[in-house]
Image (cartoon, rainbow, N blue to C red; front, side):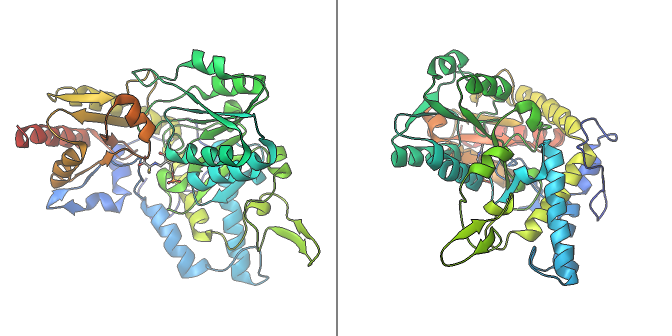
Length: 424
Ligand code: C6P
């Protein structure tokens, strides 16, 4: 996998392992992993917050500004055409990666947060009215709570919340009881950033559609870890962030069914999203331009395309297997640490290991771990209702990426033993 240029692959995602997966080869592609933190090798276990970038993505950004920079969809000159081709090509790669039906269903946004706000304010304001109901789950990130609360305030709709059990599984019987003809939107997280739970999206979608509701999936934490097949998930909207997929910050995706996006009003307005403008009337552009007002994050989209190439070359099934193996190893290993309590033991989990320790507050745990070069996140993870559900102010969270290995887990566990020693 080493190399300085993006690996070219077929447009369709590689759902099988394309080549033998070697985590040690993968690690060589991520220059930041050579960093020393206070003289100790960096052990990066904060991948749910953001992932590190492979050289191929860094090179794509560098090469864009060195040789390809121009505005897109506006110029007749050579560079503008080059940049436009690359930008449009990135959309095509992402559509294939997510198995969308057509490319124009892929809208570039700033990230998951903006994608969800776009749906709430454009689709939601147009179709959701007083007395309607919106269902979310109790394990949502604030990005999939607050936009719907605002929409409820604006429209008089009611927000309902699917609870989850002590292990972090959604209580599907409660969901069944909540669904009714007034349900207009079900917005759920695919993989919880605070618990690691993988939610049964296909089942949720089928049940929501049966009462005529639309489904939005927050895929921020699933897209980097498992093959996404939008056709199989059958959701109406899907949101994800480039920076969690080994791509740059400030770029993300909203997928929407073409017929829904077509009927929705623009979220923002300005250049590039119109067919014609007079002082009397504006005719909006077609998809996807209608939702991409202004100069977009061109280099971000191109580099996200390079990240998708990179993921495809490693193989999403292979990445998934590797991370599942690591999660199991890590779960068994941290359980040897006295006074440590794992939060989130759902039947199906992704590479998130959140816990509390009797000996110290999560922030102190994070601090000691940092002194050992181990980067984790401590806090409420922008999922305060999850903390409230368990009656804790915060947790410490280790989250895994494709480049993590068992040495990283061993370093984490050694540092956790040190926490107990320091606070004994
Ligand atoms: N979670 C974490 O440390 P943005 O910021 O738009 O790229 O992603 C928001 C978001 C939405 N949904 C889920 C499930 C998420 O995990 C996140 C981001 C990071 O857990 C930063 S708070």
